[in-house]
Length: 444
Image (cartoon, rainbow, N blue to C red):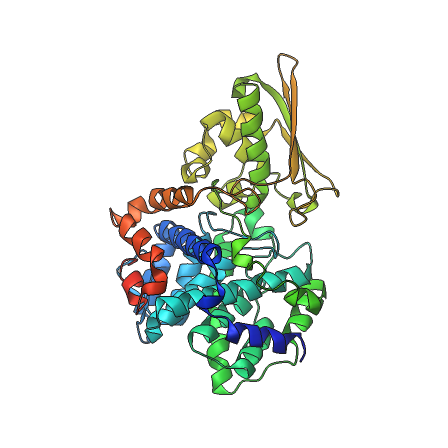
């Protein structure tokens, strides 16, 4: 058996019984957090427009468009819901495999499970399987610097989740993984820095491709013998290590090793923001006291430097802006990256005093290396410096489940209009649901 045979075997064998209490709780937390990101993002004008467009297209409207009183056929529902889920930069992620597995996997599993009348248990199994394969494909890939990890392994994760919901056998799962890899979109970092919201389509588009791959296999389309090695190793990456896909599988599951976001921006901002807050707590100071701020972090964050971003998305990918907003406004929530915050003269002036450099000894993936260092020169002559090894909200530095729930309720309050606690309660007993429709009916 080669590595793809073994991946397919483990996907098919995976059952809810394989998840201990900690793994089950982690999976539910990831599902809740991802639903919150989708619901909150659904309120943006472009996402609402996309939902109305999808609902009007021909096809069987069997999958809920999250945050709207509408349904669409599953391919388009996956596209719309995945796009909404990333739009506010509040979706969870995983440092071990790179990227954000859940926002690529959950929308596909949700659409497939709702259309087929699958149980909550089958949905959970599909989420764990899709997340695991997505993350491990990421671990195995030596990604090119120019390639944005969003979308890169998403088609494979979504395809695995869909195949798991639909009960595909090992031969089918292997073929679907390889087929989906060859359908993976190629995405760069440039839209993030320019603020072009085509970037928000990365998870939605790759999710759609994954669902499509699962169905095209049944139509008779054939795959490469090893699609991941071809696409991830030679096109999107500079190498692919098949053995890394299987190493340590399920001990623990990757869905237990991710992180939750508590700042509405790119993860690369989070360590500097965390350090800024810690330094202010140790030696209180205000925005007007700052002469300059020097940030040192890992090389892949080199592009996050624009002190005056013109759009919400570009602001979320700017370390100077995020630190300035945190200092001047005392906030890094969704509103801190929208108007009028982006035009606040205090924020813009302070952002020009933030400089960024990178250091090869720092890494986002390697838990033994630092994430960032922040050094602050104050006008009174003090210099404050601190280094971060972990991120708050990461599995290595976890927060209580109550904080994930509070984040969900806060993000979704404008959309759910008092129904947030119902969704929280339903997710808490997902494994008991005979039909996932009980959850999706509360998400419209």
